[in-house]
Length: 263
Ligand SMILES: O=C[C@H](O)COP(=O)(O)O
Image (cartoon, rainbow, N blue to C red; front, side):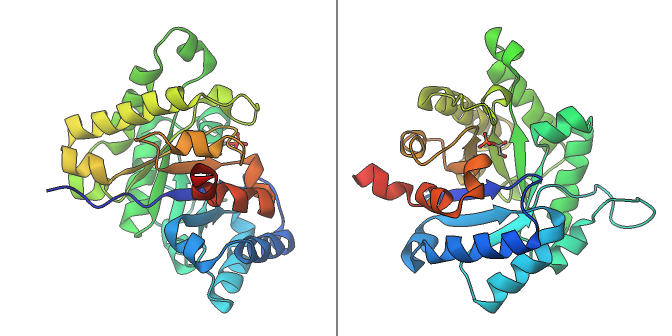
């Protein structure tokens, strides 16, 4: 039995940019730049800071926009005395459907390790949020040729204890740290090598049908000028876009990537 084709996903990670007023404008501009068909063909998602989420919910629900949204992190805990943390249930209540987990910036600046990433993946799934699980190697690992093994290890750690059925609900984003915000994009072959290896690892650990359902994104200096070549790779199902997602027209162009492919 062949599985259904994976729907492309373009997710804009705004990081710590844009206040709620700017968020409102960007989401409206983005929606106006894409047709209903484009938004149906390519799932389009924004990932604003926590403080923007209520505003994004209001505009998306009020105008019935075909744009999804989510958060950039969540707590591993369900509730309680965890000052500064945000629970998955709070995100779900705001209509979030996605949450980024294990971004390299959280791993590097907040010491998030695989065990914490795993706990956060479980917390997301417990609240019906789709984790966008980030894996990726630094330059030193890449230069030593250890990138595939490194990403496979991060994947194993993050998915520990999950059932195959739970794994089908996860999106994996391969983000080589050396390509994030540097303008230095991985080549389409580099992206395919690791995205393909992620899928193979999922097939080994779970089964091929599960691996075939999981969407694997590439992230790292994706722009409208390079998205088509990256999306042409068989195991790349979308992109996690940072800087370029802060400009509505540029992000819309990225979401319109099938047009660039068909010329
Ligand atoms: O989450 C997004 C990535 O970190 C990529 O960021 P970038 O597109 O600014 O390189």
